[in-house]
Length: 382
Image (cartoon, rainbow, N blue to C red; front, side, top):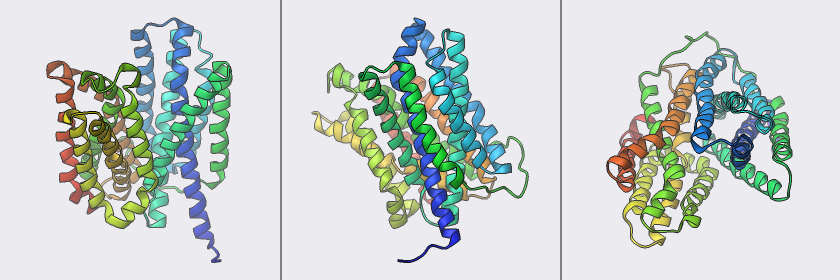
C-alpha cells in the first residue's frame, strides 16, 4: 500500500469537501421543490403570485454571485462555501414558517442569495482543487449536485408521504445538508489570492465566450425541465400524467454521464468532450422534435442528458484555467450568465413557441448548440 504525502492527503480531503458542498447545495435546492405546494397552500397564493415569489429566489442568486466571486478572489472560497451552505440550511425550515407573501418573498430572496453564494464558491474551490491535482475532476463535482438533487427531492417526498409536517421534513432535510457541510468544513482549502482584483469586472475575452456557451447549455437544460413535458403532450407522445418521463430520462443520463465524466475527459480531452457532446445534444433534440413513435423521442432525452452532462464542467474548468481574469471572477461571471440563461430561458422559449411552435423553439436550441461544437477547439486551447 502506497502512503500518500501530506500534500496528496490534503488534496484528497479538499476534493471530498468539494463533493460534499455540491451534494449539500443540490440537496437543499431539490428539497425545496416538494415543499412549494405546501407554501402556496398556506398563503393561499395564486399561480401568478407564486411565480413572483419564486422570482425572488432567482434575483437573490443573481445579486450574490458576482459578490461571491469578488470575495472568493480576495480571500479564497472556503468562507463563502460555508456562508452559503449555512444560509441554505437555516433558510430551508424558515421557508416553511413564513406566514405572508412578503415574509416568504424575503426568505426566498435570502435563500436564493445563499444558493448563489455556494454555487459560485464551490465551483471556484473545485477549480482550484482540479488545478492542484492536475487532472479532470469537475464532472465528478457536478455529479454530486445531481446526486444531491435526487436525494433531496426523494427524501422530502418520502418524509412527507410518511406524514411528517412540512416544517419537520424541512428540518430533517436541513440536518442532512448541515451534516455534509460539517464534514466538509475542516477539509476545505484555505487559499488566498495574491492580488486584489477589481471589484466587479465584466467578462471579457475568452471568459465572455465561455459565459455565452455556458448560457446556451443551461438554456437547453432549462428548456427540457420547463417545456419538455408540454412538448411531449403537444406531439401526443404521452398523456399528461406521464409527460414528465422525458425529463426523468434526461436527469438519469446526465447524472450517469457526470459520474464517469472525469475519466472520459481525461481519456478523450476537452476538445472531443465539447465537440462530440454538442453533436450528441443536437441529435437528441432532433429526435425529440421530429422522430416518430415513442421510443426514438425518449431516446432523444437520454442523448441530450448524456451529451450535455460534461459540457458545463469542462467550461467551468476552462474558466478556472484562463488568465484573462482572476479565476474566481471569471467563474462568477460564467455562473451568473449561465443562471441568467436558466431564468430567462423559459420565457424566451415561450415567446418563440408563441410566434412559431414549441417544436420550432426546440429546433432553435439545436442551432444554438452548434456554437459548442464550433468553439470546442478554442476552449480546449486554454
